[in-house]
Length: 224
Length: 190
Length: 218
Image (cartoon, rainbow over all chains, first blue to last red; front, side):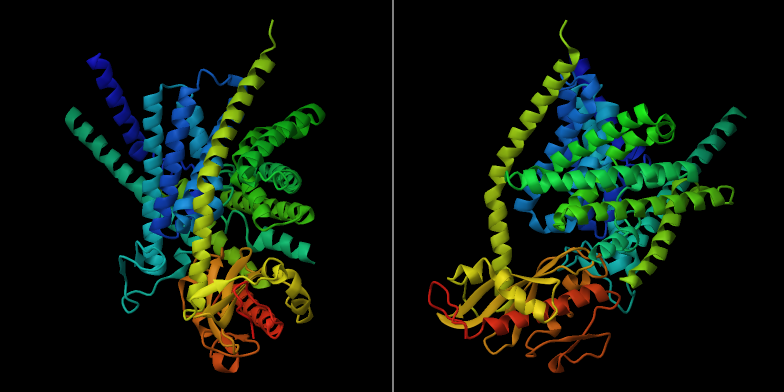
């Protein structure tokens, strides 16, 4: 019994690590690109979008895993879509009622969480085949991984494009004085989104490649 | 005149992919060769134009009178999923050649956010039926233009010497960034 | 043998039904707070554009409260402002005395769809201020209308029949305002919308429109 609990916990941890680092949905799987690029004009927007998606992902994975024996295989896609669309609409109501500023700045991208490939992708690839707890952890991990990438992307674009850090539209944690750096507007605009993400992925690729080369060298040394 | 402005603005000025970031997954994923890109583009044009008109009709004549506007996301996505399934079945029966070339992309279209995105923008900007259809066609034509251009560039640059870390997705994203700068030029015609 | 398609359809139907019920429940739950939020945004906007006023009320005559657009349409069309709608009117008072109107304009010629904003106009025609209710322009370009207050503040305290847009070097006191650089479409939507509000204001005067509380325009 204790063993089983232990393995459940470790499986959960493994899922979290997998979602945030190993198979980060944005940087590695290149999924859910639309919200990633569209709403990350500021770090706050990135966090808001990331967390909204995380909530939907956690609940949808949990529900779909719970219902996995009830949902007939042939109509599973429409069933998933209904579940995800309902969850997204609920999140949309809650944001509109309690965080209206965020609701306004995310705009049409909130209902579009429904077609975020990450959500249906995880439902199909993981939640439909695994027990509830690991599925929930998988959703949470993927969601947090998504949130991390969005926040980083938002922070860089905001810093380069508007010269502010964690601004909520009216006031910022700090602002780079114009005399030191003149913000380059293009980073807030569409092209900046593509270019900054290209560099983030390239840097990640480089770090991973260097690590692998180092490991390969070490193993060669050992065998010699 | 207004319809023309909507079409041009949807296709070029506010290009779905390059300035509104909708439909990026197929744009990045299915743009390796011009042939597949054109197939995907054509399938998207068909689905978006038809779904725009159906969603617009349903919204105006069913959801609004019944005061069920808040169900729009869920209704639209179900319509789109059903439509995609239907188009797939019809193509399979009637035109096997077309099915062979488009078939693999059809299931992908349900999760292409430019389809749901267009249906939602039509409602948001309170477009009528004609405007919705024109906006849907313009938007998807914009998608088609962008994905074919991208595929053309990728075919040309396939054997270029790209820095190791930029191979794969990063170089594609950089290309998209430059294309997006170029599309800013269209803002001048508004 | 039972038809498996019927079974599948039944299960799908059950899932849809339950989802629908849950959605309806949340809709009812959040309806109140959402309406309250909208009300709050509106009151804040009114207060921002006419800071001296202490009360904002709709006109008693519904032709000027709920159907204001129909009343103003002919005047706007005549002046060529076909892409702007007057979507709201409230009458402001300070200590029970008439102190201006707040005209809400929806400009349909924005770059990213409709832009909705409120214009506060004092009894002598001076603009008290402009406050944005909803806008979805391009981030970093048109959105600067909201982020950078220096664009809309050009109008504050000015008294003109209409304003023209120039690239730079505008003088609001003589009726010219600077556009946001790189966002001509957005700037023009605001400039025309504000002119439309001024036209509406002119046509509202001397009509004896009053609130239920007896505050009269003019």
